Figure 1 (cartoon, rainbow, N blue to C red):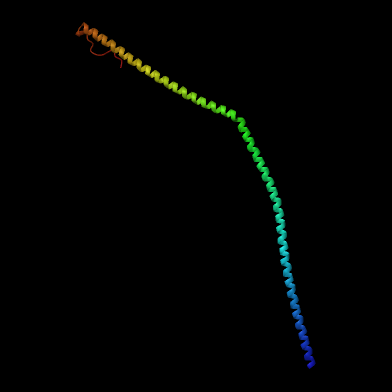
Figure 2 (figure 1 turned 120 degrees about the vertical axis):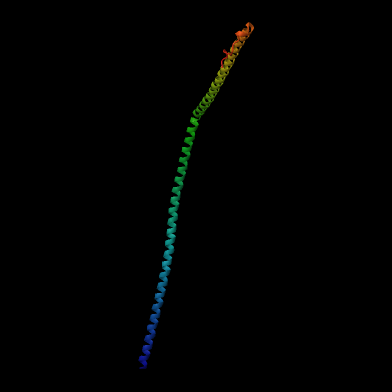
Length: 163
């Protein structure tokens, strides 16, 4: 019985040590797995970062090339427009001069017409005044002649005055 007890004790100790060893192996394996996963994630992040940087450099170069081409095209268009403006400048200046001279001529013609109208109006007024004066003088001469001839022949009203 002592021997059986001793064998049982040794067997239990062996089983316990095997369990402990197995548990340690499981812990070490899971730790190594965790380390491998972390290392793999770092490598993947580094790879993705390097790939995105390389793609970015390619896209950036394409963008810069397109931007330079667009700037060159815009400069060409602006220069062409400016050349057209400069080519049309003499014609535009002549057109402006023509408009200005026409406007000034019309203004002067209008002023002359108005001046002529005022002159005609003044002449008409003078003619009216002269006719009235002549009529008055005729009437006065007739009245004076009648007065000299006698009081019976005096005209009663100013018949010859134009109003």
